[in-house]
Amino acid sequence: MSKEATPGDAEPIDVMDPKTTQYELVKEALRRDGIEILHYEPRYEPGSKEEKRVERTIAFFFALTGLGALGFIVTYIWWPYEYEFGGADVMSKWYTPMLGLCLGVALAGLGLGVLTWAKKLLPKEEMIQERHDGASEPEDRKLAGAVLAGVGGDIGIHRRPLLKRALLFGAAPLGLAALMPIGGLIKDPKNDLFETGFNKKFNNGKPVRLMREDGTLVRPEDVSVGGQITVFPAIPGGASLKHADSPTLLIHLREADAEEARKNAYVMNQGSQWQNFIAYSKICTHVGCPASLYEQQTNRLLCPCHQSQFHITDNAKPIFGPATRSLPQLPLDVDEEGYLYATEDYKVAIGPAFWEREKK
Amino acid sequence: MTVAATSRPPRRRFRRLGKVLRFIAALSLVGAIYTAFAPGIYADEPKGFTAEDIAKGKAIFDQSCITCHGNNAQGVDDRGPSLIGVGPAAVEFQVNTGRMPMARQEAQAERKTPMFTPEEAYFLAAYIDSLGGGPAVPKGVDLNDLSNADVATGGTLFRVNCSSCHAFSTGGGALSSGKYAPSLFPATPTEIYQAMLTGPQNMPVFADNQLTPEQKRDLIAYIKYIQNDQAQGGWDLGAFGPSTEGLAIFLVGIVALAVATLWIAGKS
Image (cartoon, rainbow over all chains, first blue to last red; front, side, top):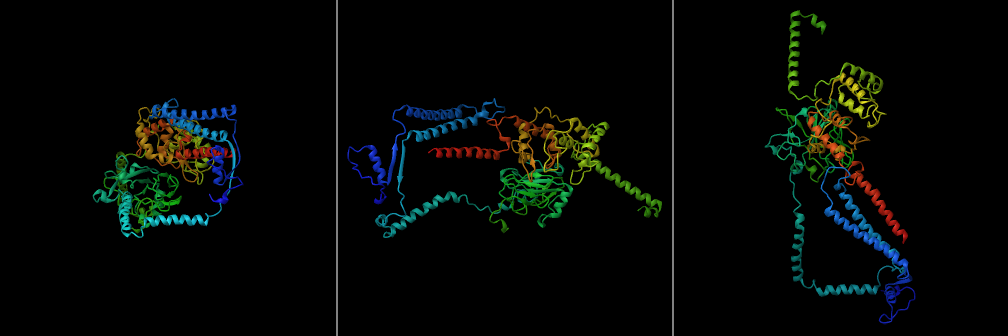
């Protein structure tokens, strides 16, 4: 609203003059904001045939919106949506596409209507506005500063220490109260991140056997050479989310591959194989996806999420992708009843990294 | 050994021989008891191949397979593996799906139009079986009529055992270095059974002791069930899962939006 922002040489007009037209008032309002109208012209003669035609087009688009939205509501309420087996003749197979189609038509109609209105019906106009440079006038800035300082002085917090302390005492606990729900999420997991369901403490201090998802125990002869199965700790809830860190991939290697794996084993992993059986945690060490795409010829284990690859016959070392640590190996043995069991828990924490991981 | 043995008195020699014989007898007894009680890894039932089948199979083998698998199917380095002990199921799977003979050495043997008739594949299977046995689809398993199989159990088994590679909707997926888990859409029930039994290429083996024939039937019934089911809207984009759908939305949707914005801006 500074004075020299007024472009051109348009004369100020008397706004309060009752004879001033609406157009002149608009022009004046723009002038005061430093905008000048160069050209202004209605697109069509008001009430002309062309204008009516454009109006009908826009009305058509809006009607389309209404019909689409109504169609959406009708589909949502009455179209059969529950799963049924079948082909293209089954109505429920078209539930989602119908919803999408109706909503699509409704939104497209609205968009096209508004667009046509703006492009075809609004008057042709051309305006210019001078660009302001830099900060406001020094005078303006001084005045604004004084107003702010005045408000501060009126509140007078620096002169009234009692109010200052009272406000602090009132506000600070309120802020803490807002933080409480977040605080509830912060919990020390203690040793949980280092232990899985194969820990002896879940089985009264005895080693934990391996079981399938359905709870049946696993014998070595259940997995043929070149085969693999997912096993869980044979404890109550071993295959449930309570022990979601425990799924393990049990692989029956070929003789030569098993020999290679034994030869390559880290000191920590030595003796963890039982004959040609080898077991690794199924939780990817990158971000914890189930890495279970086992290639039985190349002995690679792939994680489907980010394409990490682990070399099964070399300590499940990562050989491709974002994972940086080997999958932990579960030490195996077979008990006198012929069932596979874990002689002890994983020797390192399974899954993705966490801050305290290396401390143990 | 023989020189040392002749220098000994004959009685000791016989005693020694007796010891060896007793040891062999004990071993075979233990072995027999073990095989009688331990669940066999492969069903050892007679497969019913005749000598004629085997001879016909050998004739085909000598003409079409020998280059890569060697003259006694013992394998050729850097060309093809030994086929001794792979069993008839593996042969029929590889030949009937057109994967064998391979067109060239590459990361993956692809499914293509088979070069041999199912009958010729049967002869080949007979020949390979005669060289060292191996897994075969058990006789009593009915794979033609799966109407009494449990689709729900099959679904659970599929999600536990198969979906990580073949995707939830059986469309297949990528593996390492150019390999991939193929789509299960073109596979027949018998081919799926044989594949589980033998673990072709990089697929792990799911022998009949790991997934019983009953469970395999459930699994196959489930695979065929969801393949005959229509996807929402009718076009499943290859049933590969969210990646293709995301890509389609990105390429088609975002491009359409970009074009629309350009069109609106260009007309002002």
